[in-house]
Length: 104
Image (cartoon, rainbow, N blue to C red; front, side, top):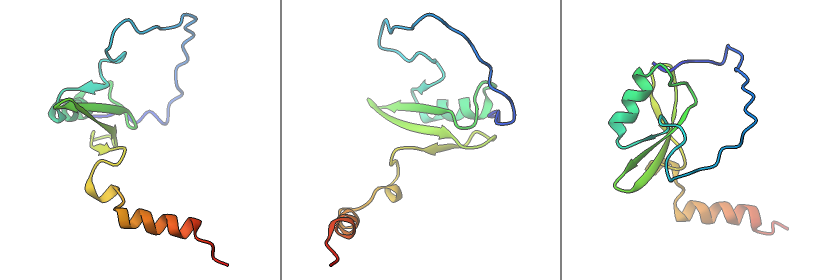
């Protein structure tokens, strides 16, 4: 179950040291998953999962981003994942014509 922490004040942590990456890995172990099943299990069952958290699923060497949508831990794709969220070439052309065509 994802936590809805919008009603709480956020803790403030003073951390006067800078963080420098030492290797190519995520700083938060709960931000990158090797399968959709792992990500869904994390979002639904992990007590540190929270609504609005951005997580990444890497499959076959390609990453897809998701956000935890609600308290049940449903994942919502970000960044144009899914065929209905990407404009077709014709739609893009129509939008550009509408914006840049001189209407005088």
